[in-house]
Image (cartoon, rainbow, N blue to C red; front, side, top):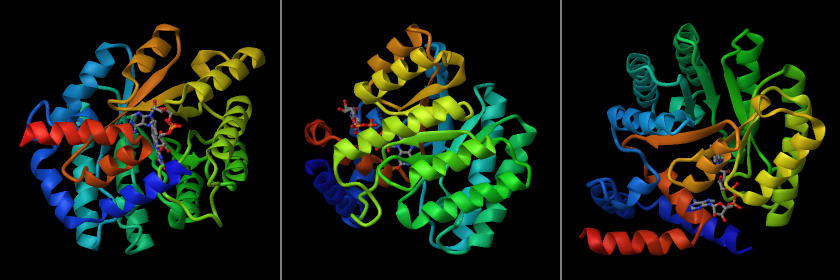
Length: 311
Ligand SMILES: Cc1cc2nc3c(=O)[nH]c(=O)nc-3n(C[C@H](O)[C@H](O)[C@H](O)COP(=O)(O)OP(=O)(O)OC[C@H]3O[C@@H](n4cnc5c(N)ncnc54)[C@H](O)[C@@H]3O)c2cc1C
């Protein structure tokens, strides 16, 4: 209940141009600035540096060039080129080849065909270089179209691509079955967006129960699923299921966000599990940052204190 209200509140704030301007000025200004906890930096060089540190500690990474809901075809093209350049930088740096992206960044809310073309441009180059590309899942108006576009790509024999399902949506159980049939790789998450009652569970217990159910399905019948959560109860349920079903740790990975539960990331790795850290970077960090605040009210105190010292 509180979590839903908190998500809604931060969703509203995320739309504030004034707040965005203020935050952008101070958020990443110094190494100690408040947004640095969740965002690796504004440039690809900073992201690569963060990725190197992650890999040195034995964890894998996926880089996410932040940006969403572009408002013109020209902006979608700019975002696509930016991703192609990130791919080049990753290859040159010699770090793990794994990226995450959002379809609205590639123009989905303006023109679906343009978005598909842009995605194909990225998949063509990334498959040539052995990348895995994860299509992040956005809010529910985009669920079906994201899955449709993913399936179009899959039917066209792109295999270096996977998508994300959100356990807050009751439909995701069927979507998971479908992905298992295809043999596609799924990242399961709880869901970061404030969603209406008619499409999503509002009760955390239901979201959690669905997370466990879908994770089990993906672990037992799916292809190298990514269990993306910081929730110790979810992680324990997944571990128990894997152990009792004889599913070895090389058949799945845990994923967590940059800057969140670093202790748990390293502990799981030390226990022999694959762990991948999602590393967001770029100038358009504000909406992502606000979603992280909305997930955990304690973050607000942390940020408020940091802003006061910053100025
Ligand atoms: C790798 C990865 C990729 C993701 N991709 C997507 C996506 O494509 N689409 C989408 O809708 N969502 C995505 N998410 C976000 C996800 O949906 C959840 O909003 C987010 O992970 C918080 O849920 P939780 O499972 O950690 O559990 P929660 O029940 O929210 O949290 C469990 C515990 O984790 C810690 N924690 C969680 N969030 C925070 C935070 N922001 N700050 C500090 N501590 C925190 C706290 O200790 C908390 O008690 C992704 C998450 C991860 C880890």
